[in-house]
Image: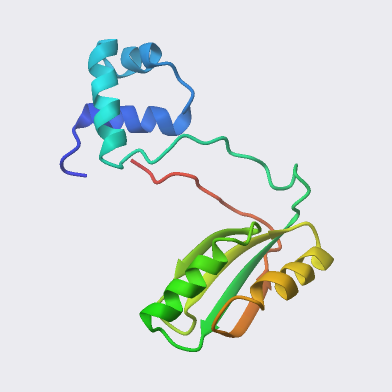
Length: 153
């Protein structure tokens, strides 16, 4: 973060709150001309600091009322094994997040399901079919306490 000055931070904070803000309004909020703000924004996007602009959809409103936290162990951690697993897990539309982990399990997934019957289908048709899986441990979220889309700046 040391290469980003106060104006970059102000741009990032503002966009985290409202990704649909116009460039003119953003420029006014951070104290720049529209062209200078646009140049700064372009640099932040090209450098990967800003990785995209997204609509945040409600899983519950879309009838996905269950979130499962799934721990997966593979048969090994060879590069080919990891690559094949990761390519396959990307195809599962219900997997929201997948992390390669250190510790007891190789991967942790966050999976959205409509209900327990839907999760059983996902487990049977997708998770159990993933390559090199030797163990699956599922836990179900009882209540979401916090789900921050952004880090504090």
